[in-house]
Image (cartoon, rainbow, N blue to C red; front, side, top):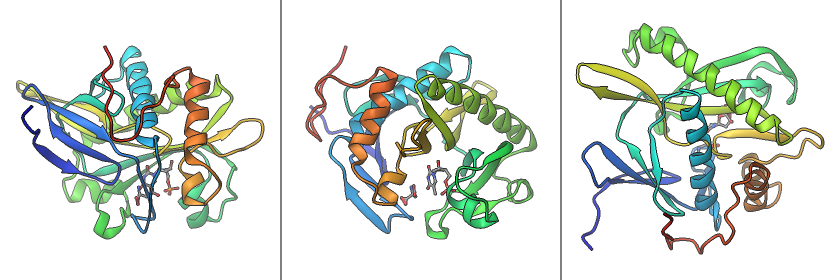
Length: 253
Ligand code: TMP
Ligand code: ASP
């Protein structure tokens, strides 16, 4: 079989040219990083869980009419997605204070916010993804005013959807990060949810016990990350029966 062309290798995923023009294969690695890759480990099975969980959320969003880049899962580690131009922003939605907002504003972790708060960070690893305002985004042309209106509405729809899905299985969605892509259709462009939605990019706390079920388990050395992500997958009913060995894709229909 001909070797695929690698387009990009990130911290947790590798992107390959897809089989059709305008498609990309997203390969989910087992690498976990935190604090801008200062901390790194390989966590067996993490990629498989994130691939399956991201498929579950992207399909659900599609079903309620929120456009995403997701096309289909190819195997345990890979999914086919539409190629899009990523807007260089991390869009963060917070329902409860935790992480950087707690530090920045001195709010105790776990405090419910008066309403969902949306923040934007400029995607630049060398700068450590700094927080930016809409003023920066407009002045530097990273997104138009129309894009920002659409991004805010998408982010809040994703928040309502994910909050409900998690609450139904006893999990509180504390906050999450999404990335937005542009796809071109003839003369039109539209925005879609891109990248991934997984416990790598959310904060998830058990409603009853407050136990953390997300990447903070790795960031803060709180135990087994695979156990935490497996618990999320199990509650959502998408736990693979026989998680395959890392690095060995298994075909699904
Ligand atoms: P923060 O509290 O560190 O700003 O993180 C807010 C949310 O964004 C949290 O759910 C984790 C997620 N996140 C990422 O997905 N990637 C990142 O690089 C960072 C810093 C946070
Ligand atoms: N994803 C970022 C990193 O690797 C930060 C984080 O998620 O904490 O470094």
